[in-house]
Length: 451
Ligand SMILES: Nc1nc2c(ncn2[C@@H]2O[C@H](COP(=O)(O)OP(=O)(O)OP(=O)(O)O)[C@@H](O)[C@H]2O)c(=O)[nH]1
Ligand SMILES: [Mg+2]
Image 1 (tube, helix red, strand yellow):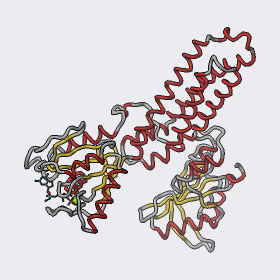
Image 2 (cartoon, helix red, strand yellow):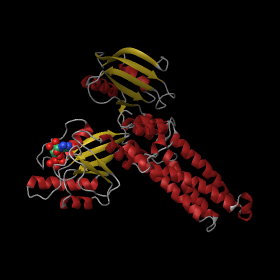
Image 3 (tube, protein in one colour):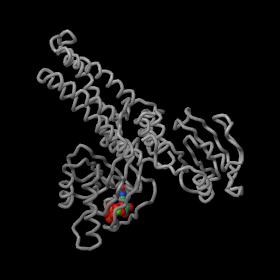
Image 4 (cartoon, helix red, strand yellow):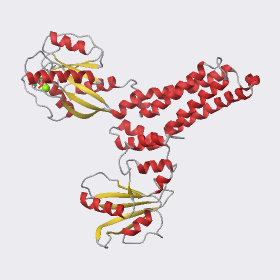
């Protein structure tokens, strides 16, 4: 692995597009030497963490751009290596020209996440922190930002280390049983050992359970607005979005296609989907729209079934309720500015609203939030698991530990301590100790370029 990472990498670290400034970054042992070939000032003897005004020159010494350039010497840098950061003018063409010059001078174009990968390989951060950096960048709500920040500070790393510490103590006793089988009880009683294992197991399981909500916090949910025609589905979409996104008319069958938008409600992110009203029809376009509505209903995490308060329930609506039987859904009686619901339906989540007059919209939002999470107190948790890879590895560790626990008095200590090692190895996978190159590249390939 090492020889490949000997070269100096470079990338445009700012987002693609027109901006005031763009940053081109170099990292590697030759960063300063490479920069010397195109910068108007010699950087070799300049101190670390200093900023220099100068020019980027082409091979004929023509000026490409006037820039501010930072010299950051390893090991106290993001990657642990020497870093040069060029603040160039933010135009698309000028940025590309500066970047091309850097590559011509001998740097290699960085792969996605390669700067962070180097930080990890140089032990500036562990793997959970590296992943938290990507989560921090992608966070689109306060809760996922908070979770990412916590992990960046090393909270998950610390927790995994704590589990390992306790497990190593237990493993030590198991190993001692292997070595000195005659004297087993002198080390610790079975009962004590069982209690010790249960304690760690409990903590590991609690952490694993936070993933259900952690994933929702990080990735959001799909929220579908469904119902018969003309009940006010598109009006509700517009009211929630606070903009005139969908066409609203008093003609039943106005919406024919599926409309998708992104929205934050309370602390969570949603993809909100407006659909064609579901009814019996022979009209070709409407029929296709309805088929799509039913597909959306099936795939949504949460459905809002909008019903018209001024109307009696008909057969179509009963069919809709059947379709929703095993799904999470809210019934929103709409148009309550005109009438109280004429009909009663029994359901745990019901709200009476007016999409048009904006009545009880906050109530609906509360309901959406509370139905979204498995544990409504999840925001108070110290640590949230938000990463599928972490969850899988932790569950594997739990499985091995359960095996030890269940067989404590049944099988020989050799087997127990083998399982214990597998458990510790799975925990190692989370923080990235002894991790294979394949796993590493699959993690970092999802990162942004230049990070
Ligand atoms: N009085 C009243 N009228 C409403 C309310 N919500 C929607 N409407 C009216 O009901 C009619 C249908 O509204 P839409 O939002 O287009 O209904 P829809 O469910 O999207 O209809 P389709 O797309 O045809 O399925 C329009 O005339 C709206 O102005 C409400 O809360 N109160
Ligand atoms: Mg509509």
